[in-house]
Amino acid sequence: MIRPEKLQKGDHIGIIAPAGPIDIEKLKAAVPFLEQLGLHVVFGKHVQKTNGYLAGTDQERLDDLHDMFANPSIKAILCARGGYGTGRFATKLDYELIKNNPKIFWGYSDITYLHTAIRQKTGLVTFHGPMATSDIAKDDFDELTASRFNQLFDPEAFTYTEHISPLHVISPGEAEGELVGGNLSLIVSTLGTPFEMDTKGKIVLFEDIGEEPYKVDGMLNQLHVSGKLADAAGFVIGDFANAASTLDSSLTLTEVLNDYFLALNKPVLSGFKIGHCFPHVAVPLGVKARLSSNEKTLKVDPGVAKELEEIL
Image (cartoon, rainbow, N blue to C red; front, side, top):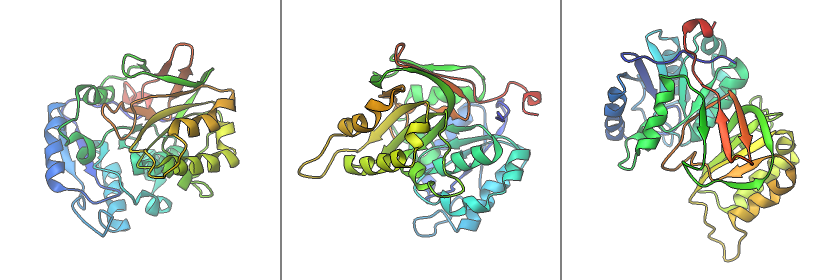
């Protein structure tokens, strides 16, 4: 595990669009929040590019990511939005460059593909959190969501409790392991690839948006049949936004989750405000976490190092 160095006021943060194209006005609207944190914002060279449903060609998006990791003045990299496209260039990523220049990498949704690839190829801790145009620029970007950026400046452990949101125990138990995961659709898309997510002994986070219960059923079944559910130590069920069924007759999302998780004999808790929602509680991926059904808590170790020496 490599924890990136913590931020300090005056540091430079780079913004890239490694997936879908961005709205430049929304991107500009997100900048004041980052400046209020004491950061100087630098845009990727190709951040305004559009190539159909992509923010530029694969090479342009890859170049921006490489440039940010290679630039010693950039201390953190924030993704502008998700959408689609990060998996298209995962095989071309320079993982040695990333490993030799560890720094904060932050995003979610389609960025799950990069979280998984980078962590498993380099050991770098990354951050599952709200992005520039899809979250920070919105009018309902709230105080709790904003406060979770503080973890980048102050490396303290974090405990998610029911003070944040009601939590439901699907399956009881206590477990400790590395926190991994993210968007369910993207996790399933890694199966059979060099970036297939390793869930063995891990606390696995799932979240998604716009997936009806039968689609979630299909994805969980694929993970079940492939052994990924059985391998894990426990599951954190985040937000599943816009998951209502359009079918005349359907199982509910809760029924689908129960079908796959009730009999696992390991802790599974749902109700976490992590994902396409507000508040959106950002968490580091790749650090040790402890999930408890008795306490109804998720305890997560810090994602950044206090000093540069801790990284080396």
